[in-house]
Image (cartoon, rainbow, N blue to C red; front, side, top):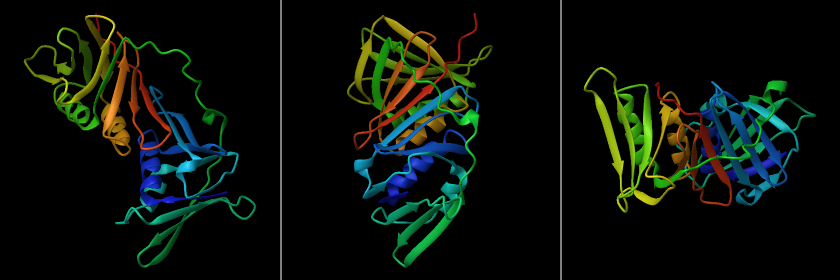
Length: 258
């Protein structure tokens, strides 16, 4: 296998995978790189597809590779310009190593990380065949990140609400038994670029343990995110990519106690 891409692309792919857990299975198929994995606590999922056409050179392996993405992220360190090229190579007949050659202004830096054993538990999670989305809002990812960070100062979960008449999207939290609260409202055309709601109010809750990490990982690729959710249903984060690919996170909801 041999894959060549600009440094920024490799860095974004690895960083997005690192948001999920430390060890992730990459699939270098003929159509491109595909990652579909559950998070470290199995309450959220990422689906990333990067087409082969985006790479400067793409010769796939055809079998899954399990890599320590935290170690890989550390090896991609350095102040490297976007135009520098990273070449990833795998020759399983010669070694059990994922090798990267990074072209820098000073020459070449070659780093390697071990390929981990693919276990039965690494089988891809099932496709989400049906997703109920009674609300769909398109907003700036940075604004969502700020709102989630603000709610984290109040409680360990927040609520997403889409409200009609007038159309607005709200992220809020309120600590029970106190007057601590956070309320972030998104309106067109300031921070919201699209709004659909099938009811007057659509509301779901989200735990904050991974929410900000998901948004920050997606922001590596795009400043815009579309959120789909329904009453007490999972929340889907759909990030717009600068190429024909896919980056989606689905997060299980935090259900409001009765």
